[in-house]
Image (cartoon, rainbow, N blue to C red; front, top):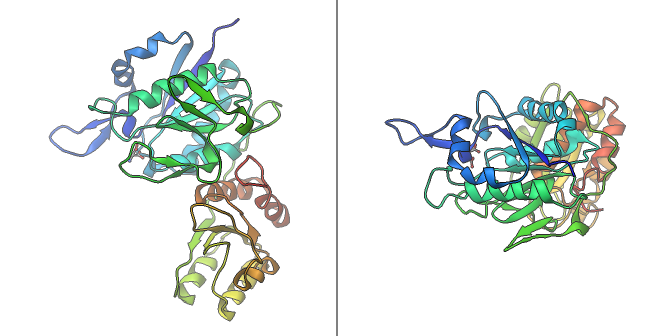
Length: 338
Ligand code: ASP
């Protein structure tokens, strides 16, 4: 059998950071030092190649152009490798993983994002475990694992179901609405019944993403002027609406009118809940009954990160508003429960 070939993409983040000279701030360091820090890598019986991005980025500096850069490298090297690991800062990792899950259409190989809460050179670092086990999973997972995942703190999660929940804990990510894909114990326990089923038709990458997207998180007493300033943003194409509970919003005539206006301008609004667990059920309460009639789409149990990535991708790919609206409410990559 041919040896497994793995490509590690290094984008930046804490995993490869060191303290700046004469300063306490963390700055990214050169990738060759990362390899030097992890001699265990050479024990894997697979061929590992590296691709380092330049400049290396703290993930808070990433934007859809950077997601596109990652997708393009995977696309360009797709036939030469069996799996991919993306080393990434944890702050926006869930956004990147979500966006990639939509951008990498008909993905037939595992793409695992990982990072760390502590730099690789520090005592008690989680960087070594996260990277080494990611390599183990990438190189020996059952063939059914062909989706974008996040591996962090012994857990392999579907990327577009994740959310960064902790600034300090090693267990930095949660996948509240979807079970794990695998767990690292004394051996790796896979849960293939949770893997995404997708046809392996050859990878396609959508080359355009839209940034004409907004996130509107409601709070009690939110002012009309503020909501208007968001919904009336020139060029706006999609809005992720974070509502209360099962998808509820205050019932106000001015809000109704602003939503009507947005609908008539072809702005697609995707309703997700502020709750970490559970799903939007528009119509369950009086306070959400009218929303579907305003063209607002239920995002059910999607995370904010998944909803943003999905709208960036849909609005980049399609111009037909009805098509975008229809697909926004469909489960495309396991990002929402049917
Ligand atoms: N600020 C860092 C980043 O997201 C934090 C981390 O890597 O965990 O790039």
